[in-house]
Image (tube, rainbow, N blue to C red; front, side, top):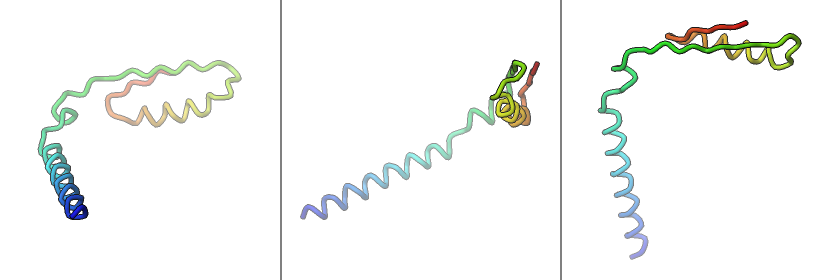
Length: 73
């Protein structure tokens, strides 16, 4: 009897989760609908900085994104 109750609970939870996923998938995306706002990323590096190569690689990755303006000096 207890196994039947757990089974029903599991099925109900799965149905609720599935309905939630369908609602999210059907909802319009704010990212697609909203205009792209430019973002400015600034990287100031010091001479002899041991972390600068990692920071430079990260900034290069971010710079490839649309709407990103990168300033480095």
